[in-house]
Length: 211
Image (cartoon, rainbow, N blue to C red; front, side, top):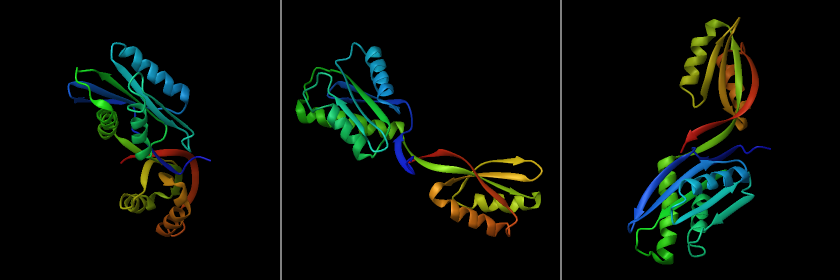
């Protein structure tokens, strides 16, 4: 069964910070398989072959079944693990991150490296964005045309998000409704239309909102 809600990175993006003259560039993407995560990591490594390190971390699966961290030559536990910890702390799923380091000549020490790699991921996520994905169904509300104004007005004033409107023999107003809220929505819409609406559930999808 698919998760009702979860958080993940908004999409592919990057963000750079400079610490003690070293450049730390965090690259993010959303992935659904370990193969995709590895392909993303390989691509960044190829693009930044001349960097000192390309450290990586990813979390994949509904129950975070796949968790990997790689220090790529940095002292053990100073790069990949702190990066993974940020993903865990944010509760992110299906997310991969690579932090590319161009050494600036000043050694940071173990504590400094942990803060730098963790900070690069944390700041990077703030810049790239995190989304909440909610499992929804598209609910079709079919009504006679004279109900349209009332239905649209009620939806605009509500927390529900409209997908669109189809003008057929009757008007079909399509709304995204979270799966846990389907019964309440149908009851609400039935009241608005005095029981005159034909309400049916359509396809299931995920709706994304920036957090």
